Image (cartoon, rainbow, N blue to C red; front, top):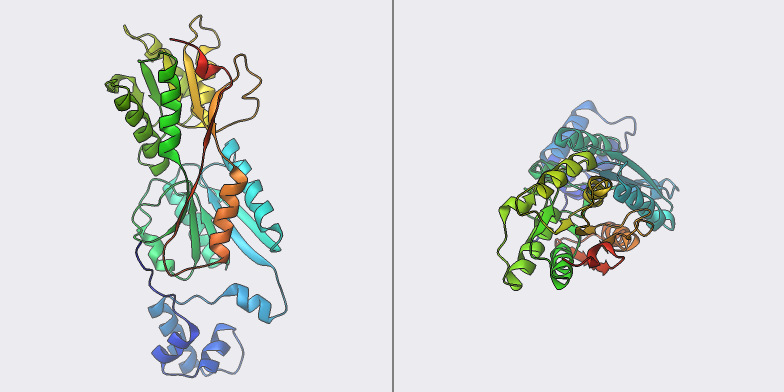
Amino acid sequence: MTARTPKPTMADVARHAGVSLKTVSRVVNQEPHVRTSLQQRVQAAISALGYRRNEAAARLARGATMLTLGLVMENISNEFYSRLAAAVEAATAEHEALVVFGSYEESAAKERMLIESMYARGVDSLIVVPSAADHGWLAEHAGLTTVFVDRVPSGLQAADVVLLDDVWGGRAATEHLLAHGHRRIALISDDDGLSSVHDRAIGYRTALAGAGVAADDELVVCGVFEPARVAHEVTRLLGLPEPPTAFFATNNRAAIGILQALRERPERPAYVGFDDFALADVFNPGVTVVRYDVARLARSAVDLLLNPSRVARRVKVPVELVARGSGEIPA
């Protein structure tokens, strides 16, 4: 792992500005009666070093205990993100933290706006489910403790990340279908620029190769986000001269799209989804899924935030395959 650059401190600002630590403290805390020339020197040093005061410590110094944590996600309407938000709130409750969140709805520009807005408003730390865009610009905010969840951010050499065991999950789902006689297995996935999607696809291809089955790119669909579009692609694939007999969906929305596509069709291909979702066990057959403990995902992220380190850390949360019927339909 790459060592992080230490965060600038008040003492660093004082040395850079050539003033006392007390003067820096008075400027940072906006106390009156500080000469304009000194304020300007301190502010210039703060800008040059990228210093950001520890809001948690400042609150504690004032006798307050409330910490503020920002949570930036892709889309709160997706069940995964709503469950993650609830789990983060639960994980921070014992620390009397306030959680504020926003969703960027697949817009990298909105993601950056949300993060910079939270930074400007003085949140103590951030949990971010990153988009596929480059996140190198976050180096400008080195003083803001950030943990990434579910995906590895691109463009950052060192970052704390909490991931699912995506490769294992993709391999387990595909091996499960192979074990039931399937050889024409389609992959329905999100943006393959996302590390989680990429790794689940690696698991899929690894399982096929291990079974001596050549991967057929005709059966791979990438970049589909909404269930309606997934349903369209599933219908298209089932119309091929050699259609797939099984599907692996890399997220819950794709699994729902498969269900929509099969609703009115006589075929009964097998399918496995990644991410559990409400009522997945109610369908006939129930939906076989790769699932995980969202609460553990959230607790791991909060633990990293509350125990900062100069060395970037990566935590991997295990996943499991839950057989409910849809993945056990034979070829």
